[in-house]
Length: 227
Image (cartoon, one colour):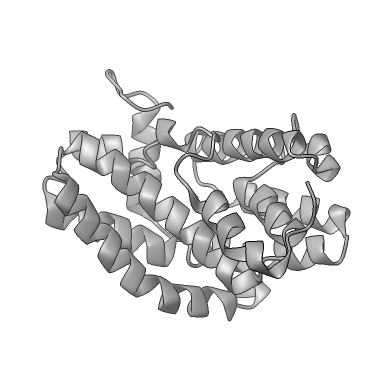
């Protein structure tokens, strides 16, 4: 995998953000399956409120600031620092299900990158401290993608995956899903600015309902999504 030339930046960014990226994100619902089962999310308005609320208080305040630090670490060639930051991110996941989802997607992305010739990804293939953001940041740094653009792609990828899940679960129409994504796209720039401005002591995600839904999903009798 060679470093991207300037003209390849957008295609590489789209490759990272694509739902076709084989990391298994489609298998996880981020607690949405339990939220629908419990009646917390019943329609398009409820689905939009859930996803946009999580965007602001979850990935926006946790993944984004740590992603920026991971990106800087990889650009500096500091793999040890990247490993510490990745474990920090996993430690902030509030349930076993959320930690497993992040770790498994991180390891899957490591396999993709290793297959493309990125040797630094090989040590993450079976690493319990692998996070999706850590490997996403590695790819972004290797392909010379700027932090802001890559963090936008990270947020968009998350939004697209959870929107696809809620469309199946409620269920909703595809137009409802597109409306949620349109609103998410409107909010992402401010979410990104807020997240990138956070000091270390302010990095945290506080979403009790999300944690409860995820924990309950682990013992939900019937499930479409992985726990």
